[in-house]
Image 1: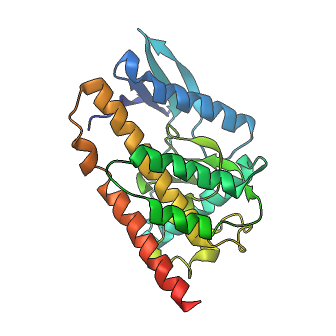
Image 2 (image 1 turned 90 degrees about the horizontal axis):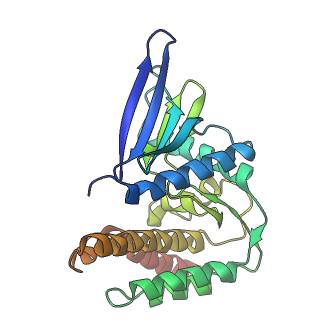
Image 3 (image 1 turned 45 degrees about the vertical axis):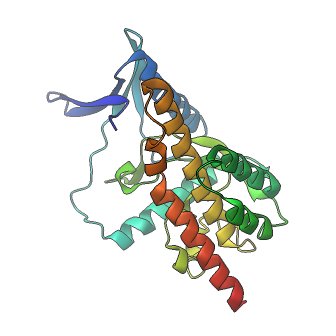
Length: 265
């Protein structure tokens, strides 16, 4: 699937400066870049560290663009997969701490998952997963933070100043700190509960509650994008039966591991 935007790296050799430029391919593709511009400005107002710095933004012939200071990757350190996970979790912990604003009623989280289930209705049944959410729902408020929205390794750069998170086009505020719970295999989730609790405030909550919610949320985001693709390109419906399969398998694996864990307790 083609990207909605083009990326260019500009250099000023005399000033020893480099810039990272994103520009929408069409006027209709400007939405994600405009979202990223808005969130980066808001995050700067919140004094959030280790995020891209906007140099310039605007529109050219109706197409949104964003210019950031280029983030040079450190040449002095090669990260193993384990080290990378540790640094990402550390970054998320600081990011959540700096964007934490109030709390969320756990029942509202279950309701959001139910809305995804409605969207998925017709090709997958999330009833069993929703049952686990409802069964494990905590009786304490949950911190509300900004969700990065795409915590793949490629969206983190280890610079000389430390780990930097980039690409905020899928952010959402007023979300639970659930993203770390999707970074650990389901069968290792209970053992890793302390490390994925990056705010050190969730020890009373079953980690499967967050893991299942996070993966249902990701499924919903994929379905929304595919629905938009179908509208714009008149793509036949069967494309959406193919793309979310990885996410569906993760949800099913979580459900099975939860059942195994329940029999032990």
